[in-house]
Length: 633
Image (cartoon, rainbow, N blue to C red; front, side, top):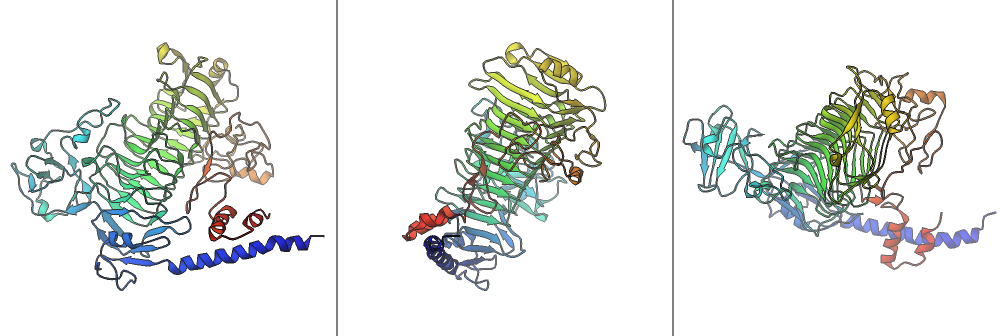
């Protein structure tokens, strides 16, 4: 029989704390305010009712506190917005579109009053003191002539050329271009049809940033807004039109056509998130993360970046994470970027970097789908890596990287999966596993490139349980010495020959038999039940259970028709093996779990509404017996 007296003793604190928490939450809701901003409003209004809106976003931002929501009506704002105040985990400050309306924040101004220039079709605007990085006609950017700014006039700190300017000045203007002449304080342009710009919508970028969250800002949610245009490169090297701060979320926003990067996750900030956003058509890259800890980029469309043609070997493409940044990129479409799709460069904090269930397609210009360079503790899993230029997946001079369950198809020029990049000063290539990948239909020189171990800085490289196929001829699997050995190696034209040399035995060479129009293996595919169980991988690219038969499938998808057979296997939710063979590598690093709607937390930790959060609140209220309540099962 249960000890009811003990239950009473333990439940009393629960009741007291529950009531106290409820009272606090009700109080917080009572004090939360709604603010309204409208292009037809006035800053002399209260802003507290839709009938009395403010005109300026910054006025509302300065007034809002934890739990408040700022509602933006549809319209266009041309003002910089800076957050200097913080919300809380339970009561963030929210800046959001009102209902289904579409507010647009632009870092540009409309410009008229153009006068004829020195030659036919060329027009100029004088009295212009800003080295504007963008001129747009009817929403589309003109090409820039000359060096963008002093910040890009020479090589980067590592000696890399950042951009090769086109032309030098007014004499080099061609249809669809512009240039800034500082000595004259004038902008010159020539439209694509050489027509009069006064008859068109011409916008010129002026702002360093559109939205900035400074070091005192935290727990800000920005939802449903559109952002356009910036002049970041006139003020600094790098940077972005939007910069996030600790535990801030950009949710369902549309960020396009800014001059350098669209979004920065926040320099040395923690827990920032970009969720279900479009981040496309930027001058250099979509999203940057420099030193950002535990970031999350989820469900985003990141396409067509680097329209200004910055050097892709320096910094350009879809996403670039540097300076020991770490976090999660998952369920994104990252395509058609001029540069690498997702690039981790010197991201070696020792924390887990997860690139999971994304689609990398058509990234080009000496690029790659995924590049993991001089970094560590990476899990590249369940990705579709399709039709990328130069490389599909590149692991270069990095440690503790698992390349699992990817489909790498249609790679052009060099290598589908490349594990090399040595030698590199101060770096090594250790503990790398390439398993359960389908590498098929590639057009590049090699389907696989792996350097040989040397017992010192290249050790523990494993490659097995992969499926290779080319319909147009033999496969090409390269194995040899790194740069210190002159890249001397052998190309094997069959998987069996490769395995004999390398010491593997479970890879296959056969048509993966993808279903029409996709990358799911059909019934009878040699990928089915041919994989090795990878600890911690419980689902496939589509979110289905990873093991639907006696063993997991090779590739990004698990063939689900086998569920009806009643045969099960795979890994438990804790990552322990329940059947079949298990990969020798567990997920590297200290894992993290990031909630799309809240604060990032360590895997296995308590969430926002958990006992620890309530315990902290209880302690703040001075309540007793909190510990005994939190420990009740």
